[in-house]
Image 1: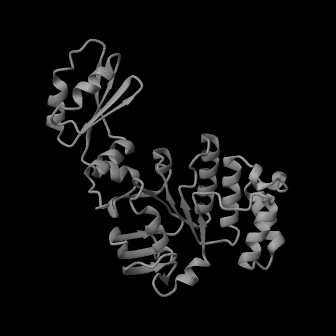
Image 2 (image 1 turned 135 degrees about the vertical axis):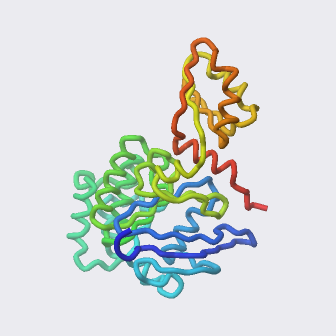
Image 3 (image 1 turned 90 degrees about the vertical axis):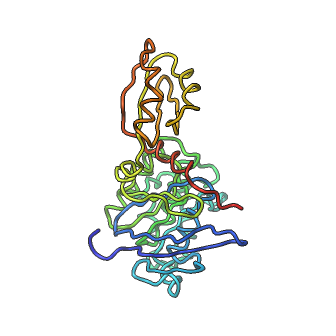
Length: 308
C-alpha cells in the first residue's frame, strides 16, 4: 500500500440487542482500491461498512476514514462518501434527470445542472433522461443509483449488494464503471455474494458471524485456505458425490454439471478417500487449485454462529 490508507480502523465492535454483530474488526484500504466484503447473510458486512464511514458508531474501537476520525468526525466523512443501497430508493414517479436534480439539490451542488448533465453522460443515461425511474429495468435502475451516489464526486464509494437481481450483461457494465472510478482514485467498498464479482476486486475481506476470517487478494485468500482439491470429470460423478460425502478427509463435495470438486484440509486423507474410486471406468481424477467458492463454503462451515 502506497501513501496513507483511506481507511485505517482497529478493534471495531458492535452489538444489537445483546448480540455481537461485529467483533474486533480491523482493516486498512488504500486509495483507488476496490475491496470486496464477502460473507453469509447476517455476517456483519453492512454494519461494518457503515461503521467504516461514520454512518454508524461502533461500541468500541476506532480509526480513521479519509483522514478523519470515525468517532468524532462522522458528519465530515459522510459528505465525502457515496452510498448505494441494495434496494432501489429513488422516486419512481420522477424521471431519471429529475431524480438526479433532486439529489443535487440535497447536496447543495453549486453547478447543479452541469453536474447532472455530466452524470447522465458518464453513465450512458442521457437518451433516457426523461424516462420515469419506475419504468426502468434493473440494470438501468442500477445506473441511475450509481449516477446519484457519485454526483457529488465522493472520495469513497460504498456499495451494498449493488447487483442483486441484475442480469449478467448489466453486472459486467456496472463493474467496468466501478473500475473506471477506481482508476480516478476513488476507493470502493462493495459487499457481494457473487464469486465472479469478488474476483474483480483488488482485495477481499471475508466475514462470518461478526468476525474477519480472511483478507487479502483472491490469490492470497485461496492460498491461505489450506484446502486440497481434486477435480473429477466423467459420467457417474453424481453417484460418486453421494458416496464421498461421508468419507474421512472429505470436507466439501460440489457438482458442476459433469464435473465434481472434492476438497479437504488433509491432502493425504483426501487422496485416500478417492483412491478406491480412481479405477472407475470413464472417470478422470486430477488435483486442482481450490476455487474462491470452495474457500467460501469451507470458511462458512468453520464459522461459529453468533445468533445465540
